[in-house]
Length: 109
Image 1 (cartoon, rainbow, N blue to C red):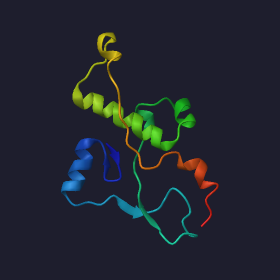
Image 2: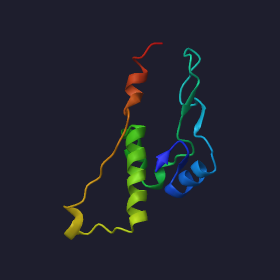
Image 3: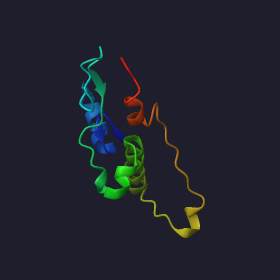
């Protein structure tokens, strides 16, 4: 899991069970021109733990979230991808909206 309540299943679940919210002030862009000033942002995310620095620059943030969550899911499942099963594996990613960085330049409040 890479979600506003935490990164990693154990952390995210612990925070949810303790009633901690992932909602807070917007930090990724200047929201002064917008009515809403809060959102559910992922905090403390370090994609370098599993993605090469050069690749990070080429990826939008939602792709980085998906790759880190996939790595965690594989580790949690203790699944070793071997040539025998590699062709039969797949990943399903759910996202409400991705690739917002290019949109940020075109949206006007």
